[in-house]
Length: 184
Image: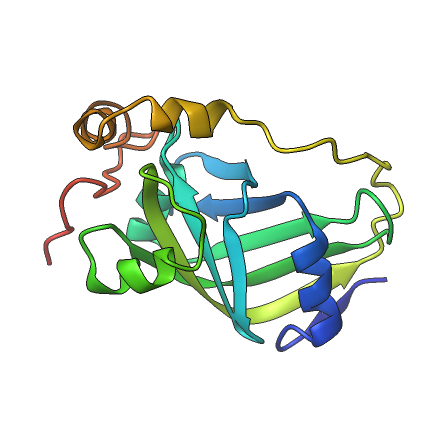
């Protein structure tokens, strides 16, 4: 049976901190809905209604483009190893880029990465748990090092070129503002 809460409790925060993967959902008013898996020590709970997660350079940039159009985000965790639970948080997010003043202090919460592309500062307005009884048991075997190695093999200029050529637009053609700010 699903239960809803106004904020994260200490128990739910510990559940989040124990997970090795989370999923991000976002959508613009039109076009494709995006659901993306995330890992690599990229999320911090900063309070009962605040989560920040760092988005590293990748093949797409859907979340940034969606939030620029419609500011809403869902984060989800599944208990694969122990407790059968699904946890979803619903809210809005502020997108911060390396050019933004607040980026630096939040980025310091995470291990160094030259591929840090955005940080999403998420304000939660609803938290929901559900049973997760149909989620299979899966054992964590470790982090993949492919993205870290790819990033370490690039200069900051090469990463910026990748953003310019590969991360400027969503699959629906909406701008992501990864290399230049959105103008009013």
